[in-house]
Amino acid sequence: MSDAPVILVDDEEDVRLATQQALELEAFDVIPFARAERALERVGRAFPGVLISDIRMPKMDGLALMAAVHEVDPELPVILITGHGDVPLAVEAMRRGAYEFLEKPFATADLTAAVRRAAELRRLALENRDMRRQIESRDPVEALLIGRAPAMVDLRQQIRAVAASDIDTLILGETGTGKDLVARAIHEQSDRREKPFVVLNLASLPPATIESELFGHEAGAFPGAHRARFGKFEHARGGTLLLDEIGAAPLDLQSKLLRVIEDRAVVRVGANERIDLDIRFIATSNRDLDAMAAEGTFRQDLLFRLAVVTLALPGLADRVEDVPRLFQHLVAQSAGRYRRPVPAIEPDFLMDLAEREWPGNVRELRNAADRFVLGLESTAAARPDLPLSEMTERFEKGAVAAALARHAGDLKATYESLGVSRKTLYEKMQRHGLKREDFAPD
Image 1 (cartoon, rainbow, N blue to C red):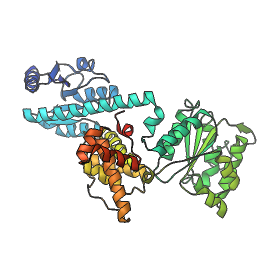
Image 2: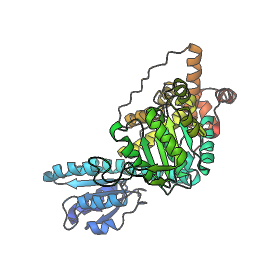
Image 3: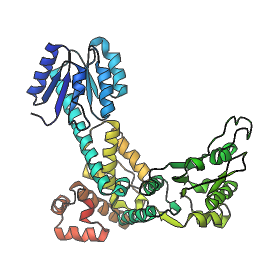
Image 4: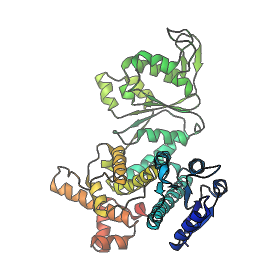
């Protein structure tokens, strides 16, 4: 019998028996039910298989069963069997999360192929869930910030140290490096984790309502203010307030922010009473704030106040060796998100990725992973316009990193696949700063 059990629900006994026999002949372990309510009792988050159900059934029909199953586990694949007149209903069910539907009469080959695909998807979903659980139980920061380049190892150590304190922090990095993710990691590892994490996007605040958004207002403070309202600062009390893209804040707003950060208090618009704040401030920026301060477009005193601790996030160009492993991780995430099987990744394609330039950093790589899972990512890449020696070095480093990732750090398999000796592989790993343990299974 297959390791992936199949729950089969159909109130018509003849159809149920015929479908059961067809699946058992293909080595599936079938658990048959005439009623959906009884089948639902066998479903749990750890159930390792697939559910097949007819749509038209008395009491609980197939759509209601699917909805109940997905309340237990949204990742459990449900295949619906439909009559000819139910096709529009089945299409709607696909929009609601059905994995597949088959119209009666269906060929046995079509049924078994659909079940095999769904079973493989379920196996990968449970494996990914178990992997995330293991990583999170061991190191939550590493679960959030994937990468084993020295710059990422140092960053995670800094995050743990910063999270253990209650100090205000400035996070700098290029677009797409994950500044908001680092801010959330600091919050989640701090004593404030049970309190709010409030994000204030300073690049998108409408000028006309800035003060009301930030500080809140009393009823009658201005036309249209029919009742009192909390501002973002009050919403974040006890927790963390993320000042996202602080460099985009106009100078008049910067002075207001400085006062709040220094006083740890606000006064609502239209009020006189001071409201004390227990907040940790984290700010992010993809701009050079020192240069802006020198130009007079960013307050020097606000920069000093925020940059008590500064974390600098590396771009992908500074951790090329992480690209193959990170892409594999993002592909697994994307496959789970789109309910697709994880596609095989050719070693040449991983090398290709390591050679590319990624100005959008992890965000751009994540988009590439989504396109890859959906079958839209081209395997052709634009080669950077670099000197031949540098292109050669980058290609070699990417090739070695991709081979190590593909063979999970197995050195013998790696040097054999690359067609080099053990000694040559060691020399190349040393020259490019690659370590076997960085590619070993978690």
